[in-house]
Length: 371
Image (cartoon, rainbow, N blue to C red; front, side, top):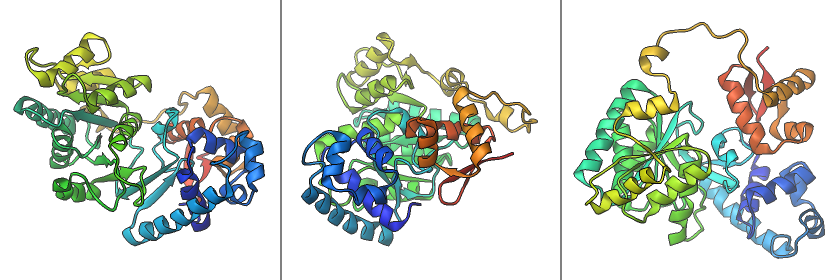
């Protein structure tokens, strides 16, 4: 976790009007770190960004720092894990998304970067058909892909069904919220949310001081779509949040699946159109998802295999390995400067390298090779 003073700056930066991941990256690349950045003058910010107030305004900066102080008090009291976009525990798959949040807040014990992760979304007015399919699917997936993490939005209907069935089958589940972690909407799902904290967690980009706005529920869909490998839509009318999530997932080059339904049922119109328009692949069972994604099933993965002595290495991985061999342990910011690659690309590449056993993470956000 980043030091408290740097965390204060990270939260403040994320709350400044007009801030985005790209702007934050540009500022950090120019200044090196958060501490240096916030000790720069407003004039320096303007020179770096080539823009005027409010982003580079001193008053805006002080206001953001004050808000950050209040949020840090809440974080410490409630055991929240703050995740700046350069942190090693930040969802690495989000780095592939240009509109990923600068800052996230997580409460739970789950892994935000599991080997396999699937989002399940759908209508708030789920039918028995949709709920039964969700239950059957997660039962099958828990047997074939144990440890698969399920992501949804803690909303009524398919969302809460996905969370509950995941928990029932001992699959970690993460609820992406459209508000701060000081509350829960809808409140009737509070018990499920608490259970998710024990096997997964709750994730949001919003602080406790930000109001709950309708637009937040649309904005959070990009996190649901972006942090996962694939999105499954189980029932959707002609319009709705589930379809927004599906199209975002496709824009992020994720796989999209949809459950076909009765052409005369309103709750199946959206899914049937996703399939018709080749946005989503038709799914009728866990096998459809597993085969499309190329996931290993339990009958194969539970057999201990001899690891390859020569894992396939990409060009980016080769560059990072060479630098780490030459310089030893390094942090993300140092690797960004050394390679001139975007932070997001470095983090996602390092995640793949960890899976291959090429690098390991150390305290303080340091990385080094395993050999």
